[in-house]
Image 1 (cartoon, helix red, strand yellow):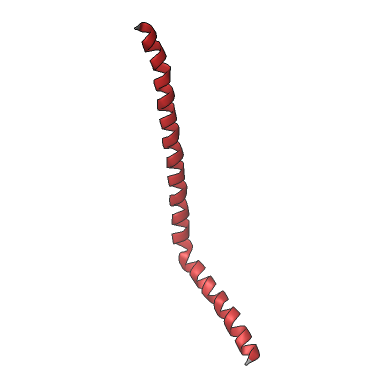
Image 2 (cartoon, one colour):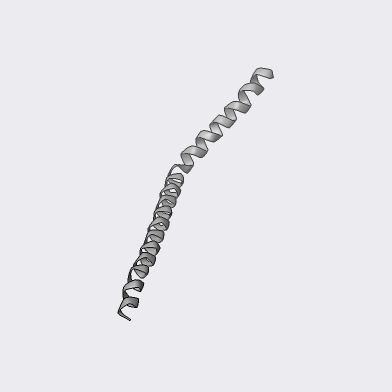
Length: 67
C-alpha cells in the first residue's frame, strides 16, 4: 500500500501541473484578445474616418478627371 501511494503521488502532480499550464495558456490568450479588442475599440473612429476619406478620394478624383 505504501508503494501505491508513492506511484500515484507524482502522477497526480503531473496531471495538476498540466491543468495549471492549460489554464495559464488560456488566460494568456484571453488577455491578448481583450487587449486587441480594447485597441480596436479605442481607434475605431479614427480608422473609420481615415478609410472613408481614402474611399472618397479614390472615387471622386477619377470621377472629376473623367468628367
